[in-house]
Amino acid sequence: MGLLRHGQGITGEAYYYERRLYWGDAKGYIDGDDFYVTIDWQPSRREIYEGHIDAQGHLSGTTYDEVDRDHRATWYTKERLRCAYD
Image 1 (cartoon, one colour):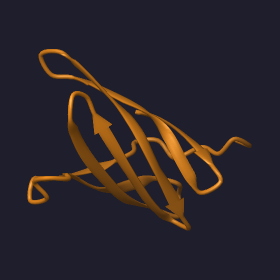
Image 2 (tube, helix red, strand yellow; image 1 turned 60 degrees about the vertical axis):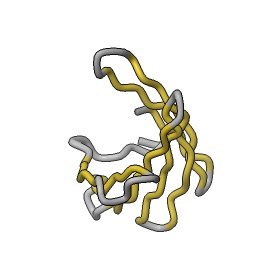
Image 3 (cartoon, one colour; image 1 turned 45 degrees about the vertical axis):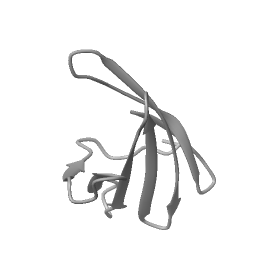
């Protein structure tokens, strides 16, 4: 996933491979330490990513399918987030 932040807004793209390549457009926002992004996967699936940035700059949270909200997974970043000034 590659994301760019513009103020509070976030845009980007995501890819994964599972027997074939899937791609999606990402958009969302950061509000303080809270992170919220939706990915519109092609051909027609949407996932929601909600998370929190900790004091060390690591991001972690939960993702779920927009239609099947009970199908959830947790995730985290191995590296800390970098701002444009790092």
